[in-house]
Length: 379
Image (cartoon, rainbow, N blue to C red; front, side, top):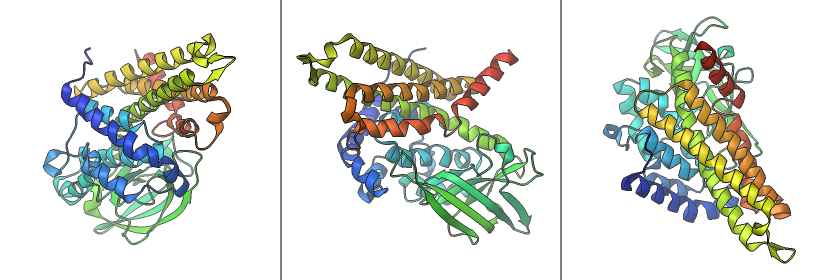
């Protein structure tokens, strides 16, 4: 399979890289301290079209191929995941279900504003008792005439506190069944409120939130797809988001390797640059090798997805390997930096903290292994 990038793809990557390196990265400390992304950066991201990469052209987006979206997210990964997460939650799992199974009226109502970043989206699946086990969802939706009443609590929802549109998965069947349905919830709907913003160790700047539904009134026309058929939509949404997580991991690895090689050339101990020591060279070699392997797994999965030949286990392999690779690369980068890497102002410490969530969200490493293992046993 040939992954030689076109001039258009290289230009796309260069534009996003320049924005991230020159505009976002210098402000990451500010973003982390304030837990807020400056409005001007959001406007600049919107002007670059970053909020519309997954939106069809007829609704104002660029409708990039899945492979090209991977390239965009790879460059976003060079920044802190707090900023990258704000774009990712919107262009990935936040918009996937609406684009895929939404009807023409739902798309007309929401997608044009989503493409410009005016309306930012999030995906609400996880609950206090349901994460990897989506079948344990207890948030319920009961139809009453021309509306549904949603009751329950979601938590750890990326961007949930600031989103203008939430894709919410709720139970419309009996407990333990797969009779789930998907709804588009606006924060102004009666019975909805944002609970507490939950403090995290990393990905600062894009807070996760608790969402509370108390007889939340959702019009019937805001149900996505058929009632009781939301299980497939929820799992498909997560699967399609995983290559984007992988891509951001690759971008973070690349940036950490750049920082580490620069430091290894500059830092001197025992009268010479530490890059001359075999121990440092071995770490850099392993960092680069794992990053390159993660890149090809991810590019392969995205290519197959564009061709309609994607296999869940292939996507899981990419997500599993790339997130584990980032954990390894971030650990090595901090070890190379020594004590300075442990300080808050050093970007390596930010990547080290951010890396941990990639093995949890959008399917834990354990869930990815289950998917891969079960596929092997099926033959």
